[in-house]
Length: 279
Image (tube, rainbow, N blue to C red; front, side, top):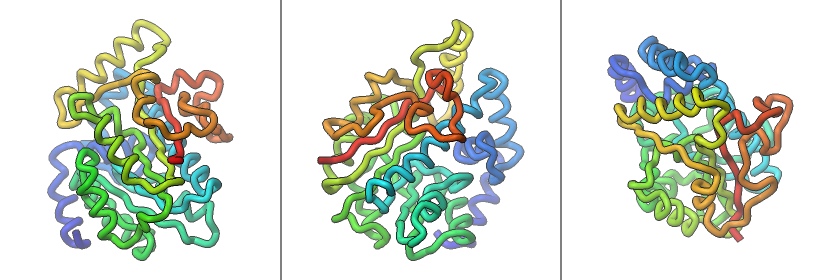
């Protein structure tokens, strides 16, 4: 997709909300429009702290990218990346590596997200090291081939596969177990798998439990139905890879820093997350 095609696609999408732009708005980004903000505010009226849930995912992403670099992995495949926005992978990675030798491929199956990514990366990224492409998480063989075709990632060397705040949009009827197993097989030894998703465990009250039920119901009427999972249900997606400390936990308990939300009560974040390494 070239710059002009991307611009036309964005301009022609303003009659309906974009999930990627709604998320961008909720976490404080600027690449969204009135129709996106209206939808986000509808959700916020039912779940007032939805923005903090989303910010928790984004903050976890930044900590995870820095941890990957600490562990010596500098190639990133960000699946379901949405819009490159506040705290995106290539900015965090470059800040953590003064050598600026990190490489990132952003992947989304939503045309609007790809269009925005194309426009934004043209302004702020290095085309030799950063690329946005269209592919579907649920078609791993095709996705992996498209990553290879970019020439950005050396798939013979360890990679960090990031699927952040995406798997709650993949229901068990879509066979995510097979999909994640396929990605784990494709990755070379030493690779890292970074996952997070929303959970319905441990609601603070009956009202919050019902709010989470309502959230699922809202999304049933969209093209992105939701399935919330318990820690046990989510943990299977790491397979037999080595879970790195502190294991699969609520995201605020995963290497928290001074920006982390919900540090006093991590379970209130509603986000579970972890990182595993391929032997």
